[in-house]
Length: 183
Image 1: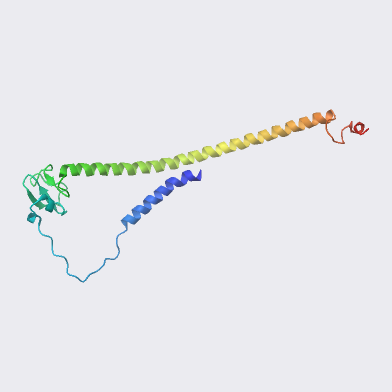
Image 2: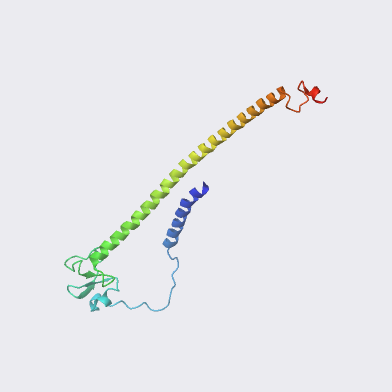
């Protein structure tokens, strides 16, 4: 019974510990005395897709064959800059449209998995209390049946002993025919 209750709690505690560890910010940063790195070259200086997309701030457009700054103010690059089917960001082999669809589906699956886990934990907690109540009622009924059985057993034994005493089948000295047994 206790093992049913500890499994969801252990899962929730493990998940909470994982989230806590992942979300801990670094409190101290190593300070160096070296000069700051030079600023990266502008995106327009990259001439191929393979040199452009490794930089997160750059976007490669296959229709114009140029590398431009990714418009950070927009989630999706505007059509005037490059069509989604021709835009590449992060990797050259995956267009921006497919990347957005894939990331959206992956995010939906993660949200759905979290929702299912939460519902499972809530339902299990509720069903465990129901099972505990049922187990308690079952144990109480079983104890009542055992007590009634013991009472019936003692009643039967007393009736049998009475019959044995009546017909002299018991070795008791208090029944009337005991004096004849010794002769």
